Length: 395
Image (cartoon, rainbow, N blue to C red; front, side, top):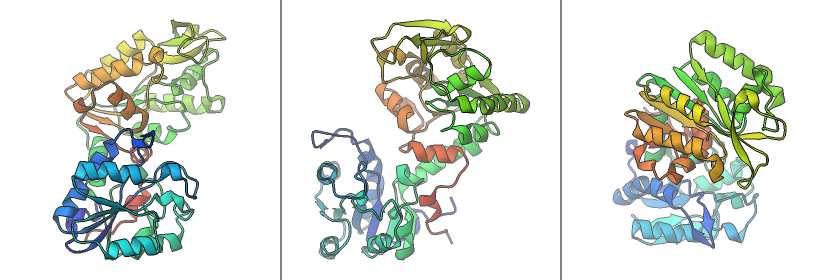
């Protein structure tokens, strides 16, 4: 936390450009879930109260560097105005004359939302010219888009070169504090639950956690690679054949470091990747050809629960099965319930893990649910975030 925070800067009367993460799900031209808008409210409301001119920018979807009318931010501006209970002006351009004129007309305490940053190919390319045009709109830059801090884009990193001062907003500040504390200074035992489809996506996280966690619970599709590495047949299950040696090495490393690495002992298998498929529970050593593992079984849920009940800090990234299909959601949902009942610090690393907790209706029972899957993953790996690294150092 050696970077400037919002309260380090006097924003009164200044034009403050805030990178927010309003990449929200849309349905029929309306915002379907406003969680990310609500998460940004403390920073926006603080700037309004302090008498800043608040200029917001965000991406939405993947327009590929060109204008896509389906991905305009007008519905977002409308929902934000309702949440703030005040008008939010929206521009049809991200940079150039139209936003410049709109900003010149702003009074202190007013809010303006620029058009989707990803309509410009310079955004993802971190093009200096686009970054300069963004920076010229404001005096101060605030990054409050935790979900985009792991990307070095024009609106998250490049823009900092072209403003007088740059700091993190309250959301980013809180995310860094909660996740860093859970990893670097946790109440122990620290138990990490790592799931998701592929080992290759989580190698860095597992290697980092082997130096910090007391126990590591592995589920989801990635567990199949570890099971196969033990010499078992895994039938038609998803497996990364080129990662078997890596899985063996990680298991060996856990043993040498005294980390309790727990793999599923039984799984729910299906004869097709479908919610209508025939299913059965089998031991991991009994998976037959023609069947694929899509969830952890009851015995595995029990062994995971036994480890978790003594935990004082839990970090979770990645579901334990194909939880989007009800027949393969039990493992993930039961572990969500276990976490909800724990007297422990529970940190949920965004993405699918956050979606599972929301789906279970137990979000309020968790200590912290990250708004950024990719960014939280990078922090868990012990890596720096480009969008934070770019900000001004504290004096």
